[in-house]
Length: 198
Image (cartoon, rainbow, N blue to C red; front, side, top):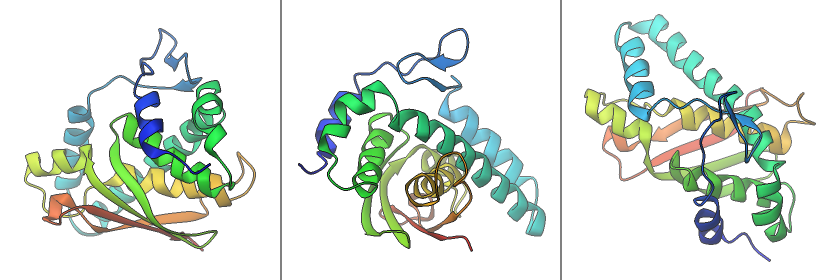
């Protein structure tokens, strides 16, 4: 059986992604914050627009690294959850490739980004296309016209780390993601290329 992206999106969309008083999503056993996307977009935009040159690049790098760490640990929680095992795991034939395809279906189901893998060379390279993502909305609202999808970049490198970086939790930091196209820069979609970072 192949990964049925639409079925995963439909089923995972039914899960209530709300943290309890301890900050956990009880259904998935991962940590969550409940701040709106506008908060994070404005937070990122203010930091980035306050600086130029090397300082701005360092701020951008820190935003990607924060998203990478979040994606790594949260991603592991999701792909080891009972919900994943019930909905996605029965569709998996090829490990870890089908796990990656399933992970991006979950990514879309929860509104982070409508992103899908368009090219995958195992261990080497992954190319994503995102047709909508909350960071583009924030960049457009703030008048930012340069690549602004730090969360997608960080999470995508984390997903490759989980797939090919080595046993969890020691496989972190093996991949990087570059944004080559963006809705916020006037392109018809965002494009993201993940490759080895060393």
